[in-house]
Image (cartoon, rainbow, N blue to C red):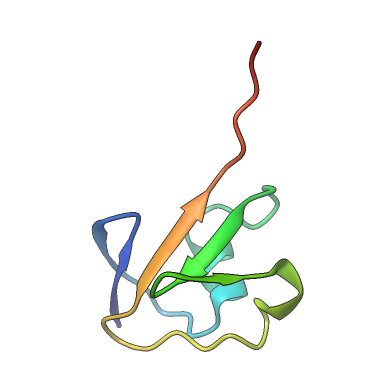
Length: 65
């Protein structure tokens, strides 16, 4: 299915948010996620189904000083 990830088109096989994170190489990373502008806590990623055309945001925390 085709989805938007951080404003870029992606074609993915997975249908849950957790599986999409793994598919896109973010499986072990600490990130924040949103689907169609709604924040999705890490505890709900396994059960959050992604549909064709959804917009997913993946944000990694920044460090610095």
